[in-house]
Length: 210
Image 1 (tube, rainbow, N blue to C red):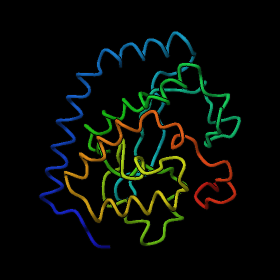
Image 2: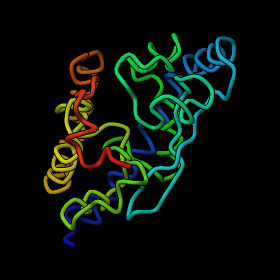
Image 3: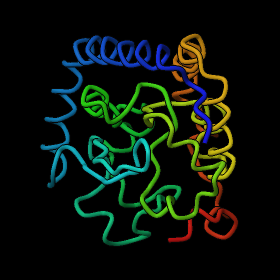
Image 4: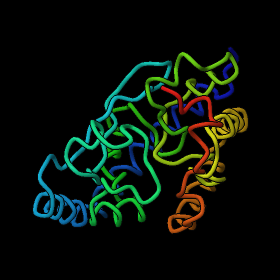
């Protein structure tokens, strides 16, 4: 398995993550407090949702998100799968998802070294056994809050397409590419088309089968 990112690039990327995540936490701290209070007031359950995901080199970690669904949503309805207009999403949760503000707690994951600001999105645990050797290369880097696949189709892509874009990102990595992805992320936050998964994904996408 080839390594596309040099040690020097990796050190620079890590310091970039630490500095940017600290700056963003300071900037968004008032919003974080308001969101936390709003979740607590409007819906019973925990404020931050923790879910195990596949991290770098296949090591599991707990992904953090502001809870946007009703309590214990993963145990009923479509389970771990999110449907379009999913009734389990709270009114506040719809806003948080639309604006991606539910992802803010992942800045803590970044500071802990479990994630990067930019990288492949962390995959569910059941994906790991399905990777072929090429797809497994997406695990060479820390998963990201946003990534190349996120700004080139996001949920509108099937997982094999998203993984292909993730591997492309690793092979073409540069700090400038990370900056470009961050700019595109800011411009595509309200892109409704890319925020909706294809309705046939359960039948077509091999990674959607548990």
